[in-house]
Length: 636
Image 1 (cartoon, rainbow, N blue to C red):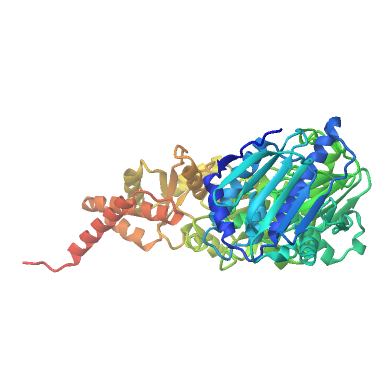
Image 2 (image 1 turned 180 degrees about the horizontal axis):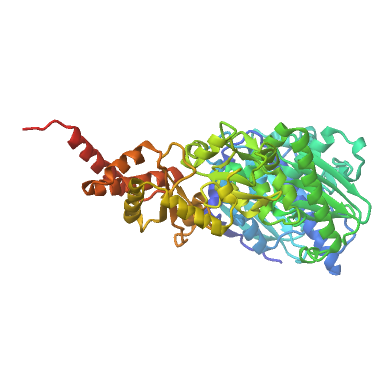
C-alpha cells in the first residue's frame, strides 16, 4: 500500500456506548482488573492460534507464543501484546463494535446505578476489552490476522465512535495500546505491573514478559502432589480460573487417576451462585488440557449441566491435542473422565452432608437449585442425587430449616408407606392448609414446597427407597394404619357405599345441595376423613398432578388442561352441623348453596389457585347483607 487510506469511521452499538460511559466515569475503584481482562483476552487469542495450527500446517511457525507488556513512561502508554490469532477488519467490528453476547447486556443492566457492584463481574459477561477505558482515555488496537497479510489499526476515545484503517508492518497477533489517564502513571511502573500480574495472571499458560523479564513462572499445580501444595496456591489458581473476585472457593477437589486412563483435575465450588443474584444461567465451562496444553477453556461437556457452577481444569495425556468439540462426544476417554468426575463430586457432597451437615446446607442453599436438576437428567446417579436433596418440612418453623429424604424416613411411622409433601405460595400459607390437619393429629411429617421446582423434582423422582412420594392433596394418600386405604379398589368402593349409607339424611342433603351448586366446578362433593377442624378442603382425584403443580404449568401454558378437584366436607365442623339443621327447610336451600359456593372459593384460596375475585367479593357481601338484615332492628 503506497497511498495512505483514510480511516473508516464507525459508531458503537447503543449498548456499547452505555457501557463505555459506565466504565470511563470511574464506577469502579479496582481498575487493575482491566490488566487482568486484557491478559486473559491475549491468552484466548493464543489458544485459538495454537488450536488452528494443530489442524492447519500452513499456520505453524517457530515463533514461541507469548504475551508482552511494554510500558512507555515518557508517553504514558501501556501496550499489551500477543502473537496469537489476530483479527481481520470485519472481526474488529464484530468483536469490539457490537455486543456479541447477551451476557454483556445483563452486566450492563445489573451494573448501572450500583456503585457497589462487584468489578470482578466484568469478565463474566464478555465485556473484558472495554475495561481498557477504565485506564485509558484513548485506546489503539494494532492487529493482523494469522490468515491475512494486511494489518489494521482500530482507535477510539470511548466517546461513541471508532475508526479502522489499514496498517503495514504489523506482525501476527494483537497489540492493545492504552493511552493512560493523567492520574494513572502507576500503570507504567514495573513494580506495579508485576504485582498485578502475580495477583491475577500467575497461571496463564503462556509466558508473560515485562520487557525481557518472565513474570509468570508458576508450575501447573494440577500435576503436583496434593501434599506439596499450599492453600494459597489453590486459592491463586481458583482466582485465575474464576475471575469472580472471591479470594477462595467454598471447597475444592484435586483428583488424579493413572488407570485405566490417566488424568489430573482440580475442581472448585465458588462461594456464591450468581444465578441466584439474577445474572442468568451460568455459562462458563471447565478448562480442558491434553498433555498440559490447553485444548478448550470453556468445555461444558466434562460435567453434567446440573454441576455447571463448578470451575476447574482437567488434563489428560490420553486425549489428542487436535480433538474437536464434536469428536469429544464420541471419545471413550472423555466420556469416562466425565463419569469419574461426576461420581467424585457427588461422593464429596455426600461425605460433606454426612460429616458436616451445616456446611452442606450452606452449599445447598446456594447451589441446590442447580443440583436438583439432575433428578430429571442423570438417571445413573439419581439415587445419589436424591439423598442430597433438602426440603423444608412441617417439623421446622421456616423454609430455612431443611430436611433430607433419609432423615425424613428415619423419623417416619413404622407403618408409613408414603413420603408426603404439599406445595403452596410460601411456607406459612402451606402451614395453614386444611389438608394438613390429619397429619398434625397423627404426628406425620410433611415436606413443605414453596418452590414449584421442588415439587416438579419430587414428582419426577416419584419413589425413594420403595416409598411412593405423594402430595397430601391427592386422593392417592394412604395414611399409616388406615386399613381402608390398604384395601383393593373393589373393597374401597364397597366401603364408600357403606359409608354413604351411614350418613345422616341432613348431611346427605347438604352434600346434594353443594353438588348441585358446584357440579361445573368440582369432580364430586364427598365426606372427608382427613379433616379435624376445617369445614372443607380440595383434593386432587387419583392420577392427577397436585394443585400447586397445575397452577405452575397453567401459568406457563394458558391452554394447559387443569383437573377438576374433589371437595371434601367435614361433617363434624360447626358450620356444616348448622347447615345440616337448615337442610330440611326448602327456603334455606339457596343459602346452603351460597355457603357451598363460598366454601369452595375459600378452599381454592387456601391452595393459591382461586379465580374470579369479583364473584368471591360479591358473594361475601351478599351474605353479609343478609346477615345484617336479620340482625338489624326493624326500622319504621
